[in-house]
Length: 598
Image 1 (cartoon, rainbow, N blue to C red):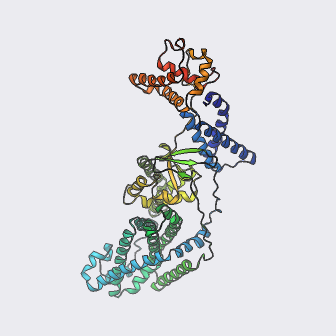
Image 2 (image 1 turned 60 degrees about the vertical axis):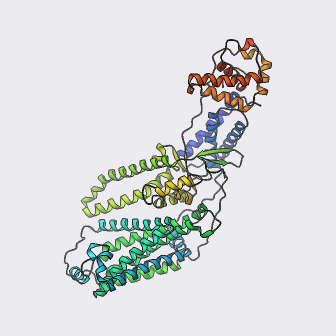
Image 3 (image 1 turned 90 degrees about the vertical axis):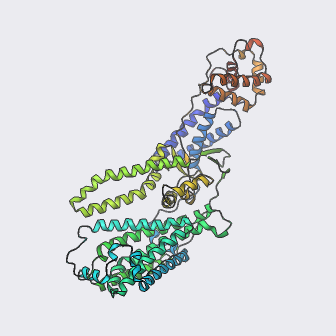
């Protein structure tokens, strides 16, 4: 049976247009809510459009119409079939005092392993200084540590001028951004099965151990503790926590022979990684200000005993917080089974509960990289533009202006993609220009947690440079997902704007001689298969793309098949070309009344 496409579209086009208009409202207003009558109407429009799409799949139809319907049905599916319950509104208080410490204790073995690696490095560095003082140049991380500790202490204690006066804000900003970069680097090295995390953590332990041993041997223990403890009581645990996250990631990478896919393992720990690294950022933020405004001041400015007391109390409170806070949290996990089918392909196929199947065209690594380049240019442009306004803070002080600049740059670098993808429904500016969009792998709405997780793991995908890990992951993963996408259960699709197709492209202004033989026209409808009818229709739509020679051959072959199945008499075919023969036949097949074109 052949569908009367023209009559079908004429009847259903109003429905499709209304649904598309409503979907545009959803896209332009993320907070749009509908009353009960509007919801019922939306659901009716979706069901009817789904039925239309299902009907077109069983009949010959123009590809443009089917693609258009797949587009609007897919978008409506995202809104209609969001069955995941939204969690209660995010509470920073609950996250900080419940979720974060609980997550830390949940992976306590990884924390102790990280602490053991750091301690091993400390013992190695301290031993090297004790038994081989000539190794000091190779062990000390900073040039100011190369001088004799006693000389440095004497110089600091007789210093009458505040060396960082007017620079505290910029110094704190520098410490925060630098320590955060180091923490994310240690965390991202978990992608190397934890080997890189171990090496970097051990090396930092060597530096720390060598410094401690050098000052202790010089009899400057009190100065050392008063210098390091105020900020180190938070900064060092934060570095260990970042390493803990790296080892959690490494554990998910290795799998240890568990009959669970890497994708499932990574998704299982993704929220924990986000929680731990979020806590690390807050800890380093505090430690940076403590180091700039307290740790760098020694006697006679600030008593060593007071600084040691501050650091000790801070460390005790941190231990109590991590070990006791949030013990009553309930561990809840929601599992979702995807209805995605198919193997490695450039399209992801979604099956709706209505039985309608539509594809999502996956974006390739090259297109995604170009979008990232555009976004990187945007970040640089935003920071450069904002610098003009940030310089206004120089009225207060040069130091304050520099501090604001560094914090702003750090914020934009981490939040640009998160904010744009959330408020623009899965698109950054680069993705918008290249017609890309981030979606949930099941075709459902993108959640804020998914946006945060996929962008948090950019530190891993960007390792070692230019997104090499992420690029390799998109090439080998089933759905072209980088590590962040696998953890967040998201995909990046090509989302071009698809308009309603023009349906009169094959309008014939010539007399159709076939219509003189209604019985043969009826037989043509009965005998011609949908596939052959669709081939003929597509050949007409693409006729201008053929070379003159191939155009003649294509229509000659198709016309030959038509003539074998239903031959028309000579008076109906005399004087017309094979192309006109197919045009006449297609008009009969797709237009039952003969008065309006397909």
